[in-house]
Image (cartoon, rainbow, N blue to C red; front, side, top):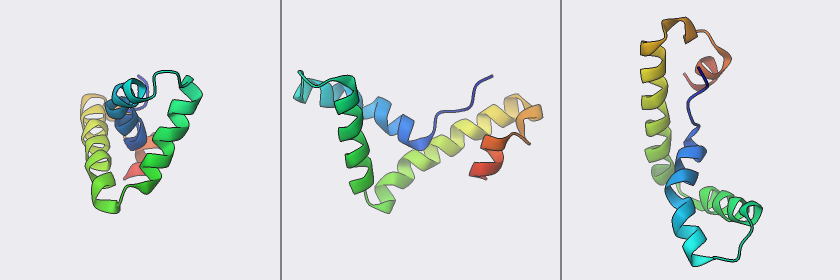
Length: 78
């Protein structure tokens, strides 16, 4: 099993298509840089939405696979 998507990854997947429509000629690396810049500009309450989504995914992963409860990505989050 792979690690759950991080909060930024959830944000990225949610906003990538819209950004790509607005900047159709941008390379994937440029889109990623724009997404990262927008992520850094988010205030704490806006980021918390994605952090909570990450924690929910993480919780489901640990509940489904209890042997993962001591893995490095679980310990880093909780």
